[in-house]
Length: 565
Image (tube, rainbow, N blue to C red; front, side):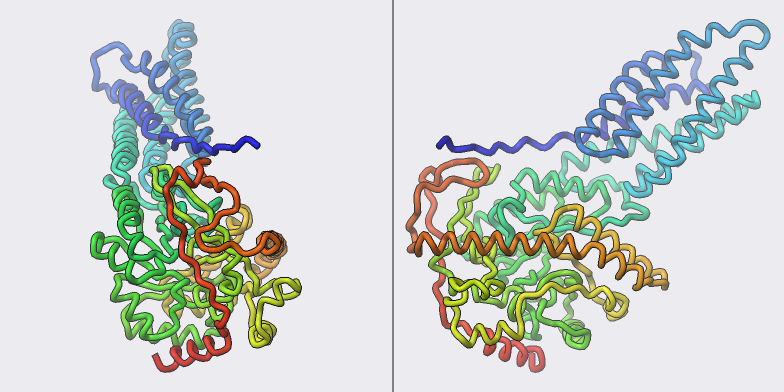
């Protein structure tokens, strides 16, 4: 069978800088004429066709390629505006004759600008969801168009002249915004400030997993160049982007990790979420200005664990998902305040046995772990151990497969007894969100790695809306719960299908027989690029084979840590 090689397309350049630049220059030339600053003969006309028209229209088409409906609509419409205005000036305006020629021309211009000010009004409203710089472009343009159509309809020369001056301000704001897109895009970080969205139902931040370095499946991770693209996209929307380096990272991996981190730092990522304290310390020593959060995989439930991740450089940690009551989370928050570290809370997630990062049930299936090679776009490669989430591979979720005889027989009776009373469950903390916000939890987080974008988008919208309502002092918990209940069936179907897929994958591995360390069944190929493993000169990732881990005693120990530190 012929091997399929996956090729990633390079990221597309942002056409906004070009579109804004074209708009700015042509607006500047026409506005200078309206303000009576020029002695020439309509220098703007040629550029209305070539730059403000044709080039801006191209920018609009490229925004369609980038799936940016706002940019595509704005640039395409104003590209058409300049082409249409140029055609009117060359073909229609000369037909106005006689004593009323000027009045006829001004009446035409008044109607043209009135029509475009109507379009600009709703674009102005929705520009508040982009950033402050773009909003100011549309605000000054709105003022320009209104002043001009008032001046043309009334025949008031001073109003037209004022409209010219306001148009010059519009051009300067658009040029600044264009420059910001160029400079920030090339620097990979925000050098020229554009501000945040003035209102949004989007999350304030998002996490991405780089290929081979997170607890996600490879298909949910990003290649190296895609992380930069994601950072630019997040910053353009006024959101933060954090990179998840939350697989186990051993000391021998630190040089490869830091080569990645150097690039992320240049691109202006807003932080890292990490699991291994030693790796946190290495990143923090090199880039102390970049925020580090301790992953939920750290399973932080005690004072001593908080101190450990804080000393490694973390400014906040994701609270253990094992904490299933408000009182336990409030106690954790009080301890965190004493230690001096922030608390991030998963308000919509799943609880692993003894908490995410604390469970070791997967080790009962270590002989059936599957090595997966992932080869990144920067030329690096990693080996993920499928079945062990801490080694960069997904968990087979054997805890949810005890109804399957082949899985059940791998567990001792004590584990099966524990799973009957406490198992991996989905939870949501919607009703307690006002209390957690009052408590001073630093960040509220939604788990989203395995769900379709439309499900996550809907969850984000309803939680964001509730958070905004809490801030306004008017939380509508009943409506939020009704909205959530409509989303849950889709979420649950997705999770159930994913769990069944993982169980089938595990059963297939068990049917093939155990795989010893370093062995390979056939020739493996890189998930991303199709390269054969022998071409990568890789070494096998280490695996454990522990069949003595007891969740009951583990939970008892962790509970002791909660109360005693």
